[in-house]
Amino acid sequence: MGHVYRRPSARRDLIAHYRYLAENAGEAIADRFLSQAEASFDDLLKQPKMGAPLTLCRSELDGLRKWHVKDFDNVLIFYLPRPDGVLIVRVLHAARDWWGLFGIEA
Image 1 (cartoon, rainbow, N blue to C red):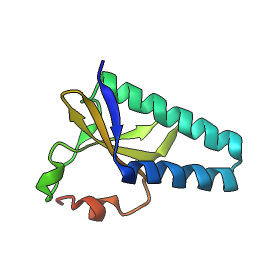
Image 2 (tube, one colour):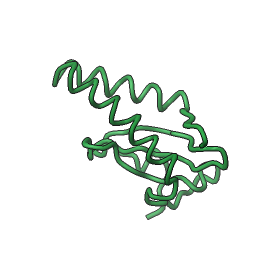
Image 3 (cartoon, rainbow, N blue to C red):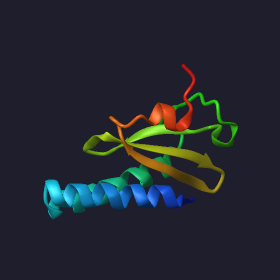
């Protein structure tokens, strides 16, 4: 089995989501979010092609795919399949302008 790698930006995203949920929905929900995010990362490790592929203008992110956190459908995981696992690039709320962030081609 491979490994789940996280970019520093993905770690920061997870912390920000946790803090927001802890402050606005309670620590139990925030803890469940982290648990479900980890479970989703493990699912991506087992089936790295299950996320939707994205067409980008930025070549350094060729192969980027999108999936959601289990039970938190408004939180998207952006990741790159790797021969030895998956690289979690960002974990963003769906309402955020992630199209512009990644330079998605229209």
